[in-house]
Image (cartoon, rainbow, N blue to C red):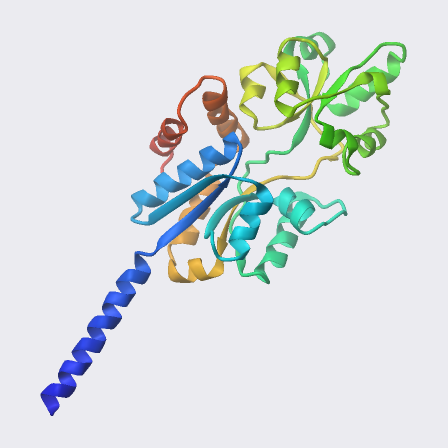
Length: 298
């Protein structure tokens, strides 16, 4: 009878041990959005975590709202999200928030949904007004305030501004930007086009001003000069690892590992990697591998 009880305990202990191994080896689903920077971030994270022994199922090319829904529903464990997107798109926050306050606000809101915002990176992929390098050199303009002053000093000159249709028409887009800086673009001065064509138009000197993203690879590849947003009109879009709490509970080393990766990213590094993919034509996998080779991560 004693031997029987021992056997039962051994079987139970063995089953528990096997279950713990399976839990530790569970596949982590890593989600990414459908633009270059997200492909790069997802590939870097995938390679990094696989090297640490995790099993990763990377799913890329998803729209923001679809990816968000998948993570809230437990179908995705890890994403790289942007503070501004979470605040404005997901949580409908309309008030102006400084970067730290925005991060703390979305972190607190998502904690109620079982999503943990880890350390945000210095990488801030926000909007900017960009000038062709030649125009910036000729005028000496480096800030949006200087651009507004230049426009005011030349009221009879056309200052054509290229942007996507969404920015031209949304309530936190063109009109409040004009109000913040005291400048005015006439209907004839605004050009609505596909976001990608804005970079081409700037590169070819077809327009003197364009709406760009600060870490888009074409900024560097096409010699476009982003203007400083000296009145802080544009919200912060700091890239941040967001992980399901249940996933972090099961993988206690995951948070410090992702925080180290987040800390290694910044605008200059991301700008160069995006350029290598979009302008130089290098495969995302190669660019990600090179980043990991040149950055010492725990």
